[in-house]
Image 1 (cartoon, rainbow, N blue to C red):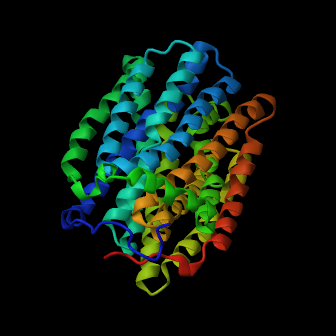
Image 2 (tube, rainbow, N blue to C red):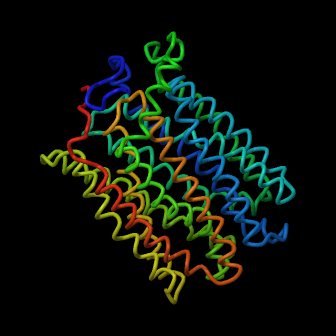
Length: 420
């Protein structure tokens, strides 16, 4: 098994190191497009559910279909990207999810939407393992949290753009046009990505004789390491918070707060700006702590602990008397989540050799996706029978368990030395 205490891999290309900020901003772009694609349906859910007479339980099934394939794709996508490399792996993934997104505009039933969302999740799950692996390959430890904050902030920006642009497209050209628009975006990104990320012949690991067998021999021992489970459990207990707001916020604003499509366009993007600020707050706070001599893993753990506190504001959000009071508390919760998430996505590159970072990230994504699926699919029946309040309470309390897992399972002497 590759030791986390050594730089187990080929020497980093000087060209890749020089172009690392170009690469991370291209990853930001893929994350923006990724979220525009997935949020198109969430933003349009109030309109589509009325037109197709869908219950909240039916919406849960559609959202859950995406999460199931997305969760599995994190794991398999991480493995594939570790084998074929980030450049090729992400290129194929974006082509796949863009085509599926465009085809979703032709769906005319709950079954068709469920099938399309399942296919969309297969491609979109590649993004974060690939981005995390690229950060591990390109950046020293002191810069990693900032690099992760940059690409992960694309999720918030994508959600913002979807909340603003998708309603406008739907009102102007019909809701089906919004799916076609989101699919076309991937073509422009592919050109950007291939120009930004240089070819790396030395990273073409799939060409090395016997590599795949060695890869799996290296992968399975990861399951025995407590650090692996710190990452997996931490994300599995925090990511449902994000999925709840991503999938259900527009529907909640429509059901409980009386928002129409125009009001959703005006206000539903605001919490995701707060999340974007949380990404950078967490990333830069960790960098400052490390620069002042705090050990890398201690800095990550401290940020996780502090970030779990704002997520408790989900409870007063559900009890707020005004829609804008609820939105304010949701903003605070998403700020905390995004700061926590930046640390969770950075930890694999702190703890493991670059060759398996994609796989560890993918394994954590599998756990997070399955947990998020259970949570998302439980929300619909809860709302149909009771209200949104139990879901808000769970979204507030789960991150405390996630923080405990990271705090007690990550040992500060386990950080791998930077190859820089």
